[in-house]
Length: 114
View 1 (cartoon, rainbow, N blue to C red):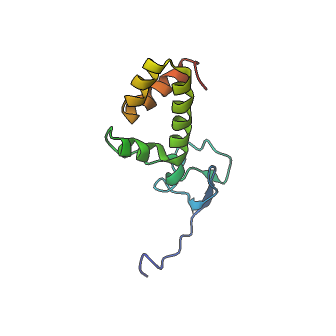
View 2: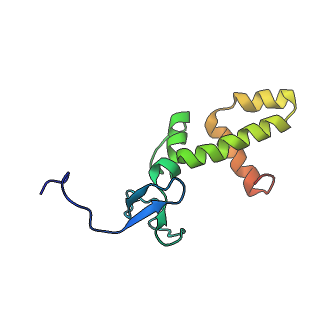
View 3: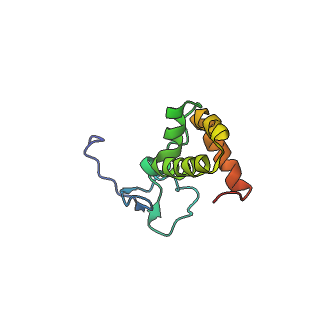
């Protein structure tokens, strides 16, 4: 039987973000080893990213973050930028994407932002 016609006989889970069904394997379910979701749910790569993506380019960081991560951080980019003085805002907006993600992450860790 070819791989294309093989039927998956293991468990299936649903992405807790988008509702997509996926195989409950480490390759498809990013929550496979953590099991932080309710039974039957997991994290798909489209929503939760590709942790193995390397580099600090904007494209690489966005691949690592996935759709949900991009929305999470980019919404906060806008909120932070609006709160800054014009000079600081221009400096923040000129920063590379990866640095903005780090800044937002640190603000969340310190409790300045949720």
